[in-house]
Image (cartoon, one colour):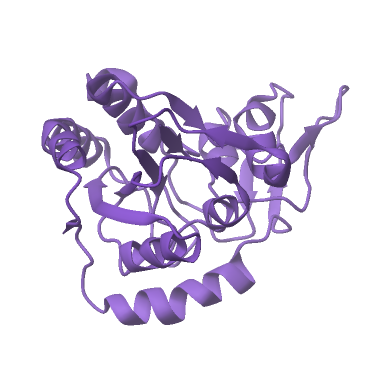
Length: 261
């Protein structure tokens, strides 16, 4: 069983390929799975492991995924192993250790923890922007080439860590990540201009957090359930959505499936 959280398509792409390689069902974490986790129950097929897939958020586990792991009712064999496969623009900090702690908190056995580098999608911090098309294309091709090895490691059920933590991992994950979760995971800085009412931002939001009025002048409204995945920002065809001044003069990431095939 694969649980996948994806805001911009990168993790969904990797999860889809691994689902085919491993023969595992893929459940995308969005909507009720995230907004009403406590009412959800999953029975893991006999003899099957669980794979958790998500993008690295500010060198940590996305809060929406963290809460899902803590709250989901999961029925599985006693010897079921749990694996992590994250996507990241460059490095992951101590995300693997955070995830293993979450697994231990549920009494689950954590096995492999792996990372796959994918194009950058995050633009809210100073100095952060999307990759240029050539870099994005190169990362996608490299990711596809890495997947057979990722799948083999999962099949082995070994407790191994294969992930690029990067420099200053402790500072990034133990100082910057808590600050990010406490102060930066807020939808209240989103605003839109020149909106044409296409509704793509509403459709892409994994938290069902965006509403759009049905007559001009159109203007999306963000509720309080926000993962800061930036799916709404990146999907807007008119670049009408901004996040305060943080996205001024920043690019958008448009996942192109053909580049990953």
